[in-house]
Structures are given as structure tokens and as C-alpha cells.
Length: 536
Image 1 (tube, rainbow, N blue to C red):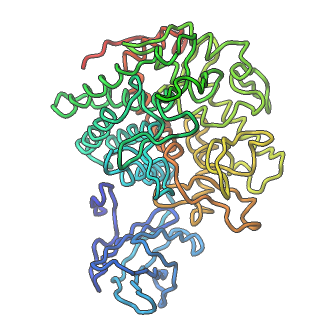
Image 2 (image 1 turned 45 degrees about the horizontal axis):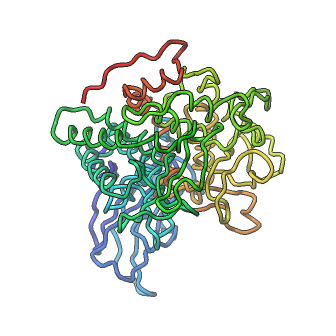
Image 3 (image 1 turned 90 degrees about the vertical axis):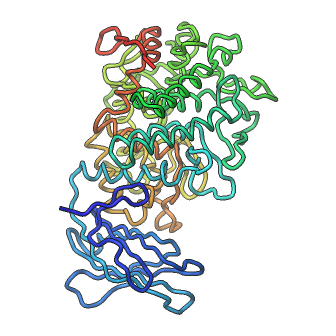
């Protein structure tokens, strides 16, 4: 039986633990294609580290890499598969060796698909647990912005759900999860809100609003709806009758009931995305047409205190005369019910963000069956990449998925099929977050990116944000080696929904949610949605 130890609040099993020698404490854990190395040193200033390895049975070590971190992922696919390796880490200052670790061993072996999914989830979870802001308990917008540390409300809503997954999977304790969410909800109570809604970003150190864009320094009801989706899921999951969980549920209920959706109609028959204390509704971004905002309208109709009429959903968001809503065009032999025709349904995050908690299985209204909508949207996006009309390198059955992400080598874009939206950038979150809809097809991408390109594409928090193989030879930089919270969250959460339906199950237990779905005319598997009363 393997030895198990809790390190950094994540479970690791190591072939040799805390082997001491020369003041370096080295740990090694083998996975499918890589070994994760971590070490501790009594002296840290000014040191760099050289990682040496040898296949067991070999007499000589080879230099595998250097780093200034105390963490290294060694992808061993150049040496083979299912092998055992010895490691030694040497600390260097200038040209002088300061200390070295003892030799430790690790093995890599072919993982089952379930083990690969577990691995990707655990690594991605670290973004929301290890990398979370210590002052607020919320999630950073991205990993590569050390000067302007901003926490994101939408990404932190995904982070709330990530904590649920961590507790359910045993990567953290239930008590640790509750403590983190109590910290986060305390910040959510105390930070500036706008008719109960949060801003898009906040400064981590001060808790004040960080302007997202022109006239966008106030309430953002779409980001707030992503947060509410996470909080309502947590309200159902943390259901034990003890002081801390009761306090958490009460705090979530208060936050939820203070969200004034009616105010954000601005006396119109639809929802307005933003409100600013200086500019009011001047930005006037009406939420309509099929995109990532289905959850926003559903929650606005669900509210027990400030609900909007059902008619607003049909008049503003939906409607057959709305050219960005109804589609029913055929692409690659598949008819797509909803989404922009210009970009074949649009980027794939439309099929992810609203459905982290909202269970699309059997869910339908008069406009679409949402499981079929999301599955076809995903398959059309994949078919377009395989068709590859612009001839980008790498596109195919094992590398597809256009969605909002960083561009390679720089910038950001809502990538989608078609002119101007497709520039050769593939985001791992696109295919991996589609795992419930296309499990076999998504697994092809996971295996390809990890087993064939993991040295470049896989890091401390899982898969990096974006790749563009067309630039590999031309510019030498083909991977954006950073992370964005709203891209990492759906990977972890939608893989969990694929594996267990966990987040779908708890969000869809919330009576407020179910009442709102009934109000809007949704059914599940052709039947009226059954509602159970909420007991706090």
C-alpha cells in the first residue's frame, strides 16, 4: 500500500518522503508522463536549482532542467513510458554548489482515463486553493499580473464551486472548505456593492473596485450571476446542522436576497449588464441573444426578493426575431438551435459558464433542448477545427476548441469559428470543459496536450491558457504559459459534472432556482420541474 501524506492541503503519495541530506528535503511523485518534484531548503536567498535524473539501472545522471523555484515538473516522454527514475536536486549560487538532496526515486506509468481526469482536476484545483488571495479568499483574475493583483467575481464564483469539489473529493477537509467560504463571503458582504451586485474586479489588497473598462466601475450582473450560481450551490452542499455551516448558509441567503435584479432593468423589459455610480446606465449594454448569460436571466427570474417578470426573458433575451439568439442553421450536418450564425454559435464558453450548476440534461424550453444545444455547439466547433479552413498547424481531432482566452503570442480574444475570430489559437479549456458533452473527443485533446506536449503545455495549475502550433517554428513561442480563473474553473467543474454530476445535483436542488425555471417555462425530460421547499 502506498504511503499517503498531506502536503500543502493536497494529497500526495511519494515513493520516498522527506529524504534529508545536505539541507535539501526532496519529494517526488510520479504520474502518467511526468514526475513532480518539490523540495525544501533552509537557505533560499540567491539560489537556483539543477535537477538531475537517471533511469534506474543507469550509472550516470543527466541534467533535466534548472529553476529558481522549489518545484519542477519533469516530463519523461523523451525517455519512454512506464519507467522508474532516480532524482537529485543540487542548489547552486553563482557557479558554486551549495547543497544537494539525497537521491529519491519515482515511477511513471500509464494512467487510466479516470486517473488522468483526477490528475487534471487536482492540478487545476490548486489555482483556486493554493493560489487564492490570502486576504479575501477569492480567486485572482490571472496568474501573470503580479503588479496589479485583482480578484475576479465571476472567476471566484467558479472558485466557490471548486472548493465544493475539493471537499467532496477529499483534497481538503469539509471544515477547511467552510472556513475558506466564510472568509470569502465576509469579503463579499463588506466590499462595495451596487444594489446588491458586485463589480467585475476588486483590488485584492484594498478591497476597492478595480475598473474593468470605460464606465465599468460598478455593478456587473453577469459576473454577479456567476458568483450567485456558486453560492447557491454551496448553500445546498454545506447542509449540516452545525454552527459554521449554518452561518455560511445564512450569509449566502442574505447576499442572494440583497441582489436587486429589478433595478438592473432600468425600467425597461430586459436586463442591463452594468451600472456605475458615476455613469449610471449610460453604458446601456442590454443582455440579449444567446451567449454566456442564460444563467443571469434565470437567476433574475428566480430571486425571492427582486425578481424580474418572465416576459423579460422572452422579450429581451430570447425570441425568434433576435438574430443573435435563434439559429437553426445546419453546420457540418448538424442543426444548431441557438447562437450567432456569423460564428457558428460563437465561442464554446457559451456552453460552459451557465451550465456549471445549471444541469442541461433533459432541460428544455420552447426555444431549445439545452443538452442538444451544447453538444451540437461543441461538435460543430470541433468539426470546424478539423475542417481548418485557414490551414493552421496542429488543428485536428486531437487539438480543437475555440473559445475566449489569451491569444498567442499576446492579446486576448473570444475565439470562434470564422474570419477574425479564428487566428490559430486553441484554448485547452474549450475541449476539456466540454467533457460532459463530448467525452471521447475531449479526452483525445487531453491526452494529446498532456502526453505529447506536456513539457510546454502543462504546469503547476494544470494546462496553460492557450496554444498556437502555427507559431512554434515561426516565433518560438507557441504557448501562453499563464492561467486565467474563468478558464481554469470550467475545466475542473465540468470534468466533475461529467464524472459525478456533483455541481448539477446541488444547484438543481435549490428551490428558488427550480421555481424560477418553472416560471420561465422550462421542463426537464418533458415534465414540469418538481420543487422542494428550502429549509435553512
